[in-house]
Length: 613
Image 1 (spheres, one colour):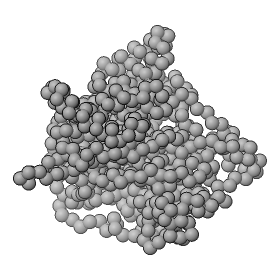
Image 2: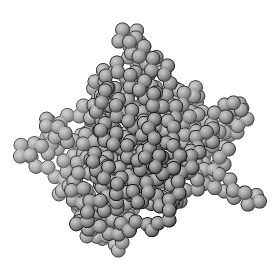
Image 3: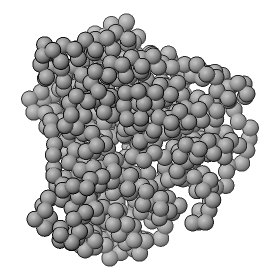
Image 4: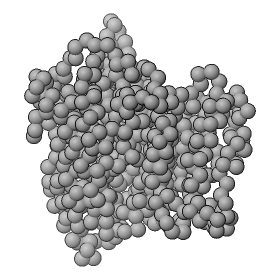
């Protein structure tokens, strides 16, 4: 393991050692199962169930290839692990990796026979693909601001990793009715806690004698998809010594009562919705008491928060003034570095240190860029790790303010210094038809086109647009999290002018965080008119906003029917966009009827989904 420049020159503790999530024997077992499947000794359904449990997702319409999904618990990843993924992507994939909205990293188009070799390489780096897919507890997420957020009660990172460690390979969650997701926040603003099966927000409560107790606000039954629901608060405060029992009780109830017959309605959110929250809440509290009274001491000890804590002494920076660019307006003539600083860098609660966001195009990063990123983390992050984010970017924390320019120059050498990471320009897009069986449209390419256009127009420099988000999915299933975007889109197919056309349903007014809301459908927009439609929305906002109202606030007000200008509600918005989304006749502009990334006639091809085993 190489020592970082930070560690060797500045007296900082050595880099954090790689955690051991993977197991060598699983790679051997996978290789043997592939051979048995090829020999016809294992049925296709049985093998599908097995490979999904081990993180190998079938590639679009080509079952001889897999997407290998790498779990990154809590989103924390080391430079060594990043370099290993770079090498594996060159040896067995397409020379690049993809950061997902759930803090996984994916390698696409891996030959089925090579999956075990990829798994073996990941084990060497301490990573695993185990239960990254399938009907089990998926990758446990944690806010990338956890530990550096000025508004957090405490750092939730060790708790997220302890929960991930407890449920990984745990017999109680190997054959759930469907996948199960757990998300940790750092505060009420950052984290996807209301759209997970279990969402946890750190909190502190004062008890007798002024003693302060750590705990969480726990939300249950949220989730995104063809039908989405916002999670419910279980109780006002759950002390930390009841967190494990609460999670176990919830998983057990889902396992026992979840719908195993109808795949379209077998996520826990449907169970909560159909049963009713009050009844489900009572069942969880009762089941928790049973768990607490019957769980053995040795089992409970497997949830070990202390072992997941970072015991290194991170450095204290000298006192220094906050960088002026973080609070100053940009102009179109501002230097590239200042533009990047304004849109990609935020101060931490640790004085003198900053978190830097690496802007990726819809989550894609090449092997060479991964290596440069790993080197930059070693050289400039006192924490010596990175976090991947739901916005499909990387966050590198504990960068000294005095070294931000050097960090920028290093990123720029590999094309990683694009601005806009914390603005409307950082568009989320799922993999879409580039690899997913269920996708109808190429959401991945569209997200890149939106980002390219917005950076070209320098919309990232406009602070009134900064809090707005755009998220795009290739079908209604919400891997792109379109329901929690200011402006969201999900793909479909519509016959227009007697020609099948890729289209997107546009949604308004979604948001994440503890006060999260789901977006409301507005209208269908042809794929090749999505960018025009969004730009028209921004134009209308500029004309009609009230005072210092941001784009996100303006869109939310319209969604609620409280617009103060000519556009007061969604019906007014539909009317205002009607002309923008029109298409000419197919013979006059055939490209308008094709999907992004395609030069042939559009057809809505799908296959059996890989989301469940």
